[in-house]
Figure 1: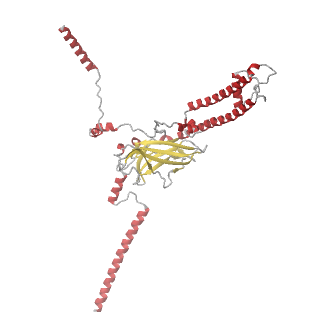
Figure 2: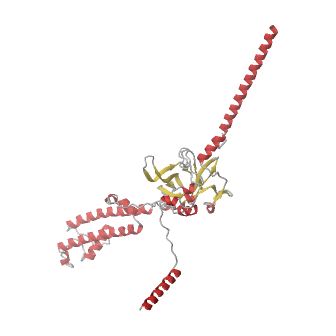
Figure 3: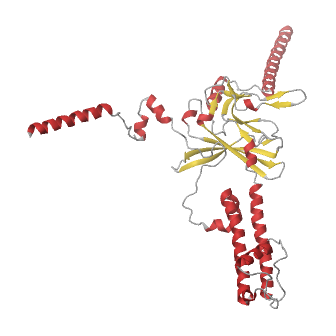
Length: 423
């Protein structure tokens, strides 16, 4: 018995060893607290930093926000028209068919009840009996008469007689309600078909945004274009920075929205979008990127949402196109490849190069650091004509002061000579 138990234990040990050898070793990395993650080596810290940033607005323009725990659902019914327009097409078509079918069945049932209560069903084929509706002999015929009445088809086989006042009243009610249903449902379908959402599909944004020098100033730039020949009227561009912040009082504001100036005060935000345009944001003291350098940019958790609005030239309806850029989609030290060329009698846009960029010499410092370095060196980043004129004026005043001093010295020497000659 002891030998049997020993052999069993040996077999179990061998099986366990074989399982340990054959089974793959899976090491589950524990979730570390923030302080411990910061103390990790650099290569591990970089891997942890490469996490997917949740977008607020997707690249196709759809907002990545879901409304949950909405208790006051009755508010959707107060604006039933907008609710129907916002529904998906399959639900909208289902409601369209169901509304008409229910109204036809409802009034068909009333026509059949009137005929049944008057006794028309008992006098089918009796030429001496005047029914409410001629040739109405059952529910199916009442349903068909309801369809003919509401859609104003009027085949002429089933007609209402003048001996049925309740039928005349029902005919008036069904005609009025049928017109209301037609206006509501057809209007809903027309608005849904003519929505300018699909027009935004031909308004394109560059895949990446770039940061480089333009006119001696550090600028954030992205490109927009219109693929259609029919233009967007009164086009305007806006940009928002989506970034969580904490106030001085300790309040945490998630997804705080900060306006990015893309030419609001100069009118550059109003576009004539005939060919692709590069939208530029100058990084100055009012810019949220004032203190962000090339090394600090990948560490930031931010998102730039760009919004292009305008009226569709063909329909006159307002259209809006949206896109966004996260930190991994902002290229430091790059510019956009030109896409507009002059051909024989016209300009041609090459959309194959619309998203292409090329590298250019750009300082790795932030705009604030560049301004501080320039102030220390007493050299501005840009030499404008006015600054040169001011410098020339200062030099001229200095020369005039020196000439005046020399003249005064000469006058003093002459006066001394005259006094000496008198003596």
